[in-house]
Image (cartoon, rainbow, N blue to C red; front, side, top):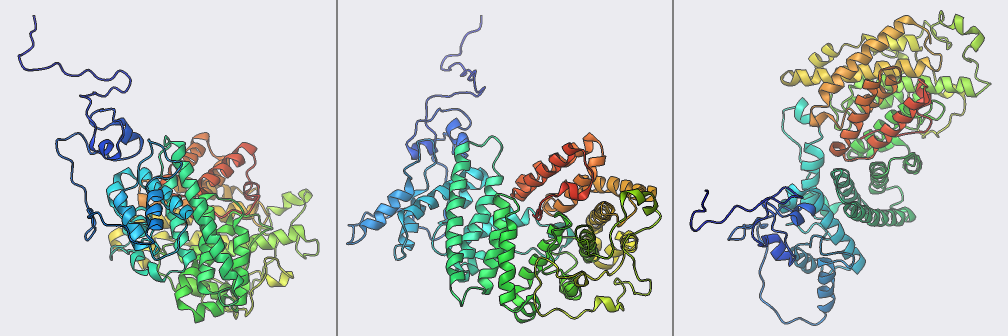
Length: 606
């Protein structure tokens, strides 16, 4: 017979529901601090785990917590001064919002007290403090591992709390999503938001908050409670309202209507809108932005007079070029990448390093994408404008169209624009910005025909480019990236121009080329998506592979759909979800044409 040793007790039985061992009814330190009833589940209580809080455990001594240097945690009780009732009231509101429950985490009271003391001289409403408290709780719930490093800062003070913004951008959004760590080894860039926060315009401060909130919201696990997402949406809506109000006030004033800060704020608002809820609304922001550019004398003048705006202008060009690829051929934007500005566009893109933070597409292939967009715009005018002199062959003559490589004639005496001595690549920049539509077909000169352009793209050598521009220490990663974009540009050229009859629709050579580059693109995407730093920059090639997958297998389509869904948490944007929805509808339609997939202007740029 088994006997119990004197002085011992039987081991506690596990909970039949949770499977965890329930010890004696002892509250964890966090529940004691918050004055809540703890379920005493070991090793961490369910209440802390449910709220995304790191449970400090049940030790005899309370675990030490990291405290920001110089922070005061204990103060002697002082007699309230005259006029301090408002400050105390705001502190009480910030500590617990009216709609909070016992299950909601309470904001660190010391941080709120510090916030109240630092901003007591500034005007702030109770509603703003409530929204700030809600957003603060969101950060704690969405990043449980970073609670100690985030909750110790007053992130909602008037100077935008550069410490918290620096943490989110440098750790969560930049270091984990930039490809430069894999492609370059010459040091890492840290965004000094803590230093520049005081000089940033108010709208840009709020937009950084929106970016951070949106990024954290899409990083929430799938089983996160709905009230957490509701608080995130409420905080985003609050700050979006503040940003729009500030931008409207700036636009209403003549001095700041088209200032550098206003244009940058509109660009960031467009990207934030796409990040939170991607749609075709971005055209409205873009139209207003281009009107501001025209008020400043055009993009060329802005480029030469404002060097600090170079990165912003390059982001405009990048967005317009890749947005045209996923827009209908008859609805292309040619404001910044108009053929009259092709020389200027290429010169601006030549000033950036081989790897640009906004895109890792090699510049030669990027220029090829611009030319493909021009050909698509030309072909759409020939289809939709009866006065256009070159119309594609009718269906009755489709059999003879295979022998003719392109319905648009090309002048053999015209030098290739890819040649440095080509006169067509040195057009003087236009002094005025063009509109979204074309006045005549002469506004879009045909630089080269589609077969010649495709031949130049196929002649591009990834190995030679890597040897000339890449880092030999990271040659494997460089070669992978260049191969991905080379195959994606080849597929985009064939799929988009063949549907417009600029390339032979029934060509066995083109079919073999498509199959070879499609297979290589899938293999390289599988290898590239394993690296966290590449998931943010392989978005567009993944969309191109999705269009080509309409002729592929169900397994290939499932891989692309799963890759887009899984990358949402790494990218922190809804654009991947929209791309997945667009591709899923396209696959179900049974169509295979490029314009059949993108019936609306989409901006797929993470």
